Image (cartoon, rainbow, N blue to C red; front, side, top):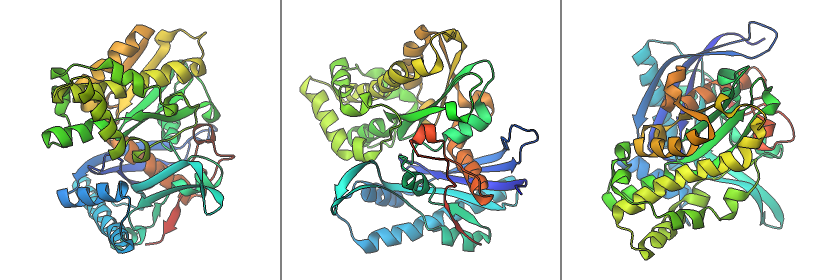
Length: 395
């Protein structure tokens, strides 16, 4: 029987900039709707050291590496996650009873490709859960994505379960857009059940912007969008990229560094340079690419799903993730969405800091898994059925 627990949700995303820990109290439903209650008790963010970030990025984009290097990184990340949970729990004075650790995605292939004579899809998240469980002496749920993939899904996005539990509305449409390294959204029509949630990865979030900043300015990200504001958007480059197959593919769909990593960034920068772009123009164009890919996803897929008969003014578009701090990107999104009658808001306005949201999501998924309850949303991932996610390391 499910019971109330304090759960730490641990998230390290495709930006590979650090770890977010969300401490939550999760309780069973009070009424017949069966939806658990989630209360955020505290959130803390911890940056990776330069050496750890470099190792993570190298593993993500590796054409070749050693088994020893990957094994060592897996165990080192487990230690880092344990440190982060310990520090967060001490900061907010709570005793954690369960940990949900997403881990660091090293490879994700949601679409089948031939391998050794068979069609194979696969995903891999690093961070040794047994290290966390032993250090904290509590159970740890990790490796959430494979169960959905084994059931025929793309194993992403998984955050829509939280979007439905916490942010659905009876009389207003809501679109929850996360802008981490990759952008992903969940569209929830007014009054919909969980099977009415549409979700998919929209394309690059901060990933291409950050990579351009690193290569051109030696900085990890464009603080506040200041560089993008100085630049000129090369709209022809954005238009050409949006012609690529991923953006027109029907949901469910997912992407990562495999599509928008180092090789893509090199091609993108080359396209910009060929039409005379200076450094600030490259960053401005990368920022516009994120905004335009979000708009394209909304126009092509979300608008019809929400129901064109409903007044468009009754749609809220709520943004979370590191991209929500990029004022230039947020202005671009407002300029594109508000003429459609869509109100753009920040996740912080709903009582959950944007940086905490994915941590909260994996706290919820861990709680569901611990009590044997499904955590995926098949309409979002394409799985054949709801499944219990994750694997448990007992503390």
